[in-house]
Structures are given as C-alpha cells and as structure tokens.
Length: 369
Ligand code: AN7
Image 1 (cartoon, rainbow, N blue to C red):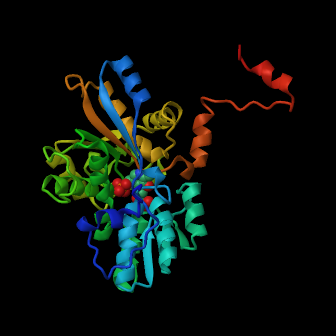
Image 2 (cartoon, rainbow, N blue to C red):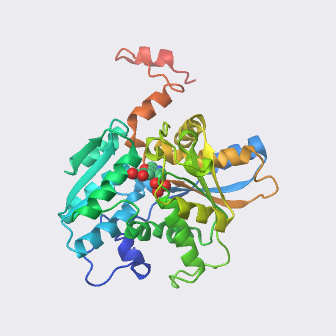
C-alpha cells in the first residue's frame, strides 16, 4: 500500500520538539517535489561548459504556497499546546499567509503586521481570507517586526516569526527531506536570504543529519553542503555588513534591511565555507522567467534569487574545475503569490494578441505548417 503523507510533524517527530500532549495542527505540508532541472543543466553546459546536476526544491507546493508552512505547523501546534489565544507576526507576506491559515485551523486569533503597500497581492488575499486581523504599518518590514516583538513581550501574544525557535525546528525538516529524496547529501545549496531564518534552519538540519540524528534515514553521513545565500542588491545588509534603512528590491518577500537571524546566517556561511552574496533585480527577473519558461516551475521573484545566484556563480567561473557536482536550489514560494510581477515580467517576452472568434483569424497568426 502507498505510504500516506501526514505532514512534517508526523514524518519527522523524532527530530522535533513534539510530545504526546502536542495537538498536531497540520495541513500535510512538506514532501514537496525535488525536480531535476534538465533544461537548465543543458543551457549551462552549452553556454558555459559546466556540467552540474541541478535539483529544484519546490517549496511553493506547500499548502499555503511557501516554505513557511514547515515552521508554522510546529509553531502553531506548540502555541496550541501552551494554550495560546493569540499569535502575531510581522511579514513581507508569506509568513502572514501561513500564520493566518494555521491559526484559523487551530482556532487561535492571528494578528498580522505588514509593511503598507509592499506585499504581493496573493499573500494579502490569503491573510484576509483566513480571517487574520491585518494591519498595514506605515513603515518597512523591520519596523513592523520590532512592533510585533514588543507586543509579544508586553501582552499574552505568541510571536510566530522565525525568532520563535519552533519555526526553525519545523523548517529544518527540509534538509532531511532533500537528503531523503536525493539519497545523498548535496554539494551546494543555493537559496534566497531575507530575515535569514531559512538558511539558519537548513544549516541546523544538515548539521543534525551529519551528527547522526534520524538514524532511520539510511544515507551516508559523509559531508555537509556549502550554503550559498543570496540577498537582493538593494536589500543586502549581510553582504554590506550593516543594516539597510530603506531596502529596495522587486522581490518584496526579501525586502528586509535588518535580518533577525543575521549572526546565524553568517555562521552557516562560514561553517559551510559557502557565501552570502548579492543578485541584481534584473538577474532575479531573468531567473524568474527562465524557471517558468524553461522548467515549468513558477515561483515568486524572491525564490528566483537562488537560481539567479547559481547563474551568477556559473558565469564568474566558480564551478570551472568542479564538474558534476550536485546543486540544490530552494524555490521558496509559488509564482501565483505575485501575479502583478508575473504579468509585468512576461510582457517583455510574450504578447497576448486579440482575435475575432473564428478559426481563420487564429490560423492566420499561427505558423503551424
Ligand atoms: C518566498 O514572510 O520574511 O531568509 O515575512 O517569503 O527565512 O526570511 C519571507 C521571507 C525567501 C526569505 N523566499 O526567507 C515573511 C518573510 C520567500 C520568502 C524568503 C522569504 P528568510
């Protein structure tokens, strides 16, 4: 009989802070596709003569369309266990969508603080549809997070941003899942960096695997991947070495100027001998369209920072002497999150033609023979 997937807590409870008393609030998140990017591999081989094995971890396939669900199932389950009545988060969009959904399932009030006018339409739609109490803060994400933190320390309200350690615990399951799907540990992991919770969680997961956690996972524990994190050029505090007051990027999810998990991200970079670097908005949008048109994988702009980073490192000759390495790119959120950006970007490549409703007028415009 086929094995049924019941979410990351059920599958990974051995490595999570879960007891018999924890009410499991799940929407069967996790178990997302790891897709071999053959067309992208071919393009890179042809244009740069570099042979890579590229795998796309499509986290947009989670129930609310982003990787946040892995951490949220644990954070909300623990909040429920601790009898919390209200949760709060600041968010560039995906955290709020996920928190709102899981809180509604748990019958917990959810307060959401978003930077006014700076989150993608799909994410805002989710937060309001799941019944969250949404406040648009006249300020950026960093200011909203400061507010959320303060409210959670002064009132009986649980913070479910990635400062909440249960979020990191849940998100680390993605490392184990990738290893399980591949049957080996990848050599490189490329990913976007915003508030830096995800790179922190992945690195924790890879290290725990290396140290022997989850012994039922029978894969050689022989190495750790290099963590390759990418910030948008206009929102790159870790790369610049100082907070950015007014972060700017088309990738609103990672428009963050003072990441909460800054030091952990640096630790992941240094311990793994990886990098945290920048990608330009133009490179993000290029990778964004490439992924959907070449691989059939529609992501939101922030997610494309991983592949933009990979292409940047291919171009600068980083892989020249290292052929046939295994690279995983984390695609953090679904493309439908940000339809405005999709329409604007695709206009450069595809023109929608208007036609009369008869076959002649279509055929005239098609080159089918
Ligand atoms: C699609 O939702 O910070 O480095 O408030 O939505 O762990 O912050 C989202 C971040 C990458 C960066 N890709 O992850 C939020 C929020 C997508 C994201 C990131 C986010 P972190």
